[in-house]
Length: 134
Image 1 (spheres, rainbow, N blue to C red):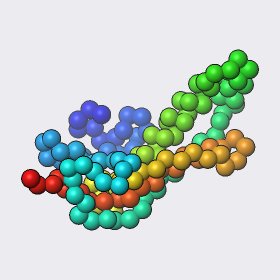
Image 2 (spheres, helix red, strand yellow):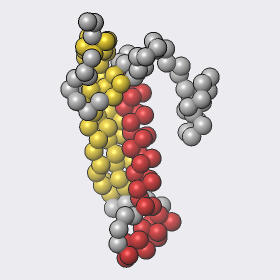
Image 3 (spheres, rainbow, N blue to C red):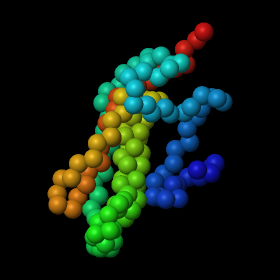
Image 4 (tube, rainbow, N blue to C red):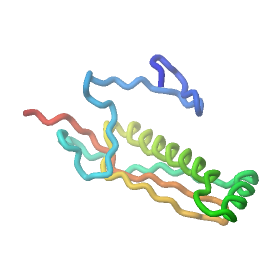
């Protein structure tokens, strides 16, 4: 994202400037329980970002044609990628609200909740980390 942007060009959400030291990531997200080179100084709790998505009529039509031919259903792939990114943004925002600078143990799940609704969930542990000295 370009510097000095106040709103996200994709979704219009306000963008908060993140202060970071040169060479140190401003926010770290990992699927592991630890971050190599960092020590956890505070555990703030479990955070979750959810996003439900429905398949529109056009997507169902394209998917129906693609399913007859076989292979990847690209109409759903792009929607699931958007939903994954949205769930990641939401879990990160929840962690930032708690004062975290990292999420450890991130888990992503996809579930069909209704006939045409898919739920993407991102869950992890919000923590405060600092680089290990030495």
